[in-house]
Image (tube, rainbow, N blue to C red; front, side, top):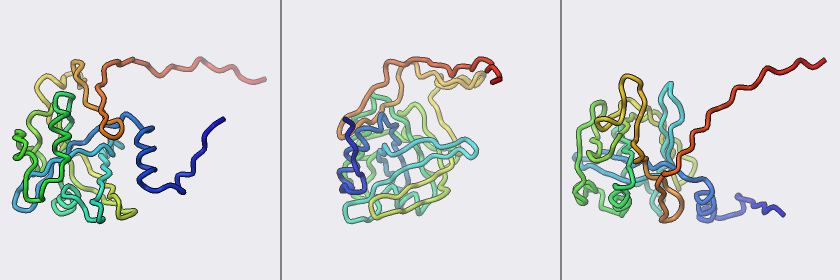
Length: 210
């Protein structure tokens, strides 16, 4: 027998619990933004992915506070129109999760946790210096369907990568086995270890139907 559930009949909290436990693994966007006065905000979001290449679209699902007010990342992106998606590997997982704590808006998570920063080339918010790659983005659209979350659509305008990660002759990316960390559910994260190549097959010539 197959279990059939009516998601519309559930509370948002229960829908979140179930959906994040079946839609996995998810990449994590460790987002840096600039607050008023230049404070650097850093926070991780696992409602995130790449959604195109022309234009190069990056989409974030930014959860609001319990009272429905936007968090610092959402406020900063809305005000400045810029953000950086930093991609963390497992060695940075602890620091990434620590930036999810509720810091005051005028306190920089990067400063509080002694995270190194490096200047971006195409946007004002800096990237995190220790990540292997960072995507510099400009805001294209902001969608609101409820007081729970905003969907931010950004255009990727720049890429900063650690030396040796990208071969600029072939444009291949070599992670050397140290792939980005993946979010599972609740407090669970995963390391990508077993990678299986699988090419899309070419169909044989189909016979004409008489």
